[in-house]
Image 1 (cartoon, rainbow, N blue to C red):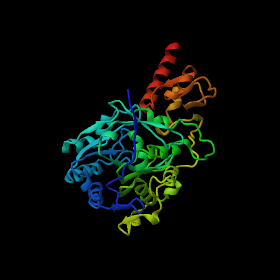
Image 2: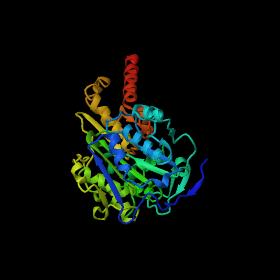
Image 3: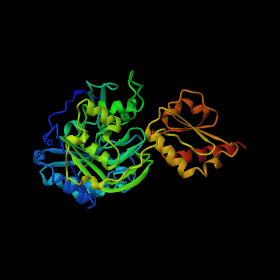
Image 4: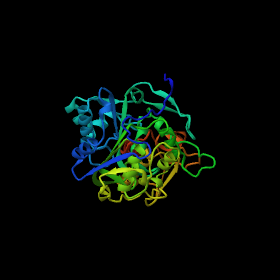
Length: 406
C-alpha cells in the first residue's frame, strides 16, 4: 500500500541565492580531500540536529574507479563532514531492477567506508513507497517515491560524472531517479511521445520529476567519470574533480563544462531550467575558484544514433531502456567471438530487446522481461535486465537441449 502525498520543494536553507547560486570545484587532491575542500566551502550550520540522506549512484554492481558507481571516498568525506556539522547521516540507494543493493554497496566499497564509520546503509526499496503527485508534469503526473526521501530533512545527490546514451549526461538532477521505488524507474523509459514536442519523453519525464524531487545539495563525483556510452557501457575517464552546489541544476551546469559540453545541450537540464527549477546559465553562477575551468577535460559524447553493430548479428530494439542496452552491448563486446558456437546451424543471429510489436524470426535471442510476449519464438532470458552470465547460461542450456534432441 502507498499513500498519495503532495510534495513541495521548500526553501532550501543551504542555497545562498536562487538567482545567482554558488558552485564550488576542487580537483587534483584525490576523492576524499577534494570532497572535504568543497564541502567546507558550504555553510552547513542548517543541518545541525537534522537527518541527512546521502544518495550516491550505486545502482549497479561495479567497483570503485569503474566510472559506473560513486567513489566510496567521496561518500566517506561526505559522512565525515556532515557529522562534524552535527547531522545524523545515512546512505541510501534504490538500484536498477535485478540488482541486490547490499551486493552493490559491497562491490563499490561503500560498505567498507560505512562500516568503518558505523553509518547505516539503507535499501530504499525494502518498504512500501509513497505516491507523490506531480502537478506540473507534462508526461508524468505521479511518482512512486522511496519513503526515506520524505522522512529525512536533507537529501544529498552524489552522482558520478557521466555522459549518457539517452539523456546526454547523468548528474545530480538525474541521479534523483534512483529515489524512485523499485521498477517504477523503468516506467520513465516507456512513455509515449508528447504531442507537439521534439524532446524524448524520458527527458521530459526527468524534468517533470525534478519539479518535486530535487536534492538539497549536489556533490558530483568526477574522480573517475564515464565518457561515451554511459551510464555503464562507456569508458572510464579520470578527472580527479568534485563539484558541489545547493542548486543541483547549477552544479550540473558546471560539471557539464568540465566534461566539455553545455547544460543547454542536455535536454532535461534545459527543460527544467526553462521551468524555473534551477539555474544553468554560467553567467549567473558564482563559481569558486576562478580558475575552475582548468580542471576541464572533454568527455567523448555518446553517439547521436545508437546502433549495435556486430558482423552477422541483427538487434531489434523497440523502446528498451538503457539498462538492457548496456547489458547487451557489454555482452556482445565480451562474447562476440563465442556466441556463434551456440548457433552452429545459423549464419546470422537475431537478438531482440524492448517491447517489440513486430514479428520476430524463429530462434531469436530474447533479452529481458519486455520480450516475454515473444518467448515462443526462441530463447527467452528473463530479467530487468538480465546480466551477461544469465544470457550465457540460457544459451548454454539451449545448446544442451538441442544436443539432447539429436
